[in-house]
Image 1: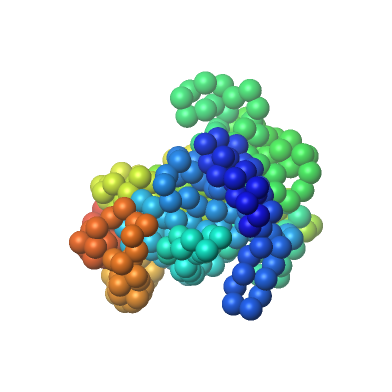
Image 2: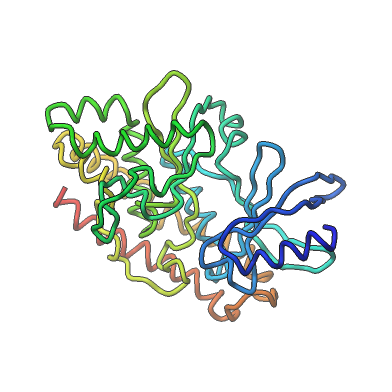
Length: 343
């Protein structure tokens, strides 16, 4: 990266708005011209930054995961969602060097973009990111104030500004249609089976922020139905988005957004969600299924994380984080199995 670009990038870290600079990405013998910038909300002010790079129509995130002692929460969450049948970003752990300065270990996360869908042979005609908690599928903000725009909280990634008009119309219809007409509308405008699998995944992983932000909505060619995929799942598996230990009963079994409330008001959909969640708890969200994966990933990363001086957590905390995962799974399963009777 040229010195002037590096200075521009450094100065942008003191502002909340995105600013991208030109750079060259080298991976082995391959060099590519890119633009890059800082990413994240509160994390962009941390001493170890996270980055977003863009190569043509492809986006890659390099997350510092500064608050996650084992750097496993995003990676494990996305693998878990894939097992549930919800398209999710691929990840890998890499070392970054910027202008000759080692930055330590990062999680490389595939962006949800045109390239993401092309690899999965999905013809996406629209894509929205839920970038703030205003994307709560309600007529009101989380503080109870009426929204000036029902498209608040969304950012268009694929498509035109009409996508914002259409998501606003969807939210309004969800809350204004009579019960007799709403079910038919939801069936024609939402991939309900996939949404329920996503809901089960978000509920199991305990991502408190994942119900009204940190998701992607997309529609495929020739269809009106919205599909949903997760992104940014760092505050999960027993820790919040600041890395603090969290209770296993913080996130309720039905999650937290207006669309889910409307869906689960229909007995037929509520029964289906119970079936999906029961299957998940019996087959996917179990220690038998997850402990070998967690142990393997944790053991592979432990030596490097313990030696990485760019991390804030001590080797003791990093080593003990595996038990945080396992304890969370045990306690979360017990909590959800008990609450199944309320569905």
